[in-house]
Image (cartoon, rainbow, N blue to C red; front, top):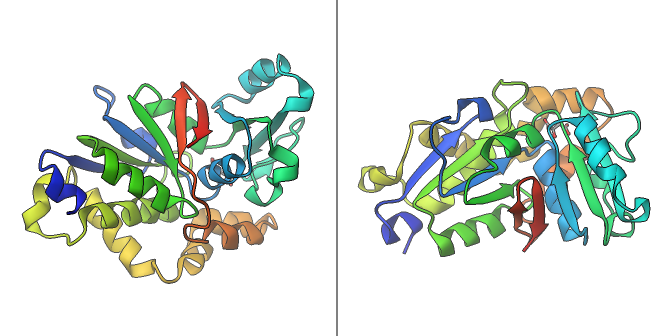
Length: 253
Ligand code: MLT
C-alpha cells in the first residue's frame, strides 16, 4: 500500500524555497532540503556520531551560544556564499566531517540558506532534514508515520530556486505517491509536487550532472569544492533520520 492509498486525507506540498511557504499555518511534518550542502552535512555529521547539530541562521548568535559550550565538545561550522566563515572550525563541506572529528561533539552550524529554511519551519510538530545521501531513511519514516500535511521545503539560494533541492523533494514525493495519477490527486497539495517529480525522474540516474549544471553546483566548483558534489550525489549512503528535538537542535534517529 502506498502512503497516499493508506491515508486519503494526506496533503503533500513542495515549496522550492522557504520564502514560498505559507506564513499563516504549519504542516504536521516539515522536511527541509539543502542538498548542496547543509542537509547533506547534517546527515553526515549525525551519522558520524555527533551529539547533535544546532542550527543558527545568524552566525553571531552561533558564536555567542557555542561560547558557553566546552570547546573540546563543540565544533563551529560557518558558511556564507559557499566559503568558510572566519573564526569557525569548518565551512560546510560534508567531506570534512569525519567521525574522528565530530564524534560526541555538538556541531554548531550556520549556512547561507539551509539553516534559514530550518528556522522558517521550526515550530512544526515534526521537523526532519533530507538530502540524497539519506532520503530513503526519510521516506521510510514518512510511510510509517503518515503525517496528514507534509511540506517538502527546498532551501534555494537567497530566495531563488535550486535545481538540486527540488529534485530531492521530487525523489521523496515520487516514492510516497508511487504511481502518480489523477487517482491520488487528492494527496497532491500543489502543482509544484508534479514539477518536482518530473525533474527528479528526468535526472535520477545522473544526479552529479544535474549538480554540475546547477547554479550553486557551478559556484562550488569555482570555489574548488567539486568533490562535495560527487559526495552529495551518493544515493542513500547514510541511514540516518535527522530530527528536530527542540527548536534548531537536530539529532539522528
Ligand atoms: C546553503 O545553506 O545554501 C548551502 O548549505 C551553502 C553551501 O554550503 O554551499
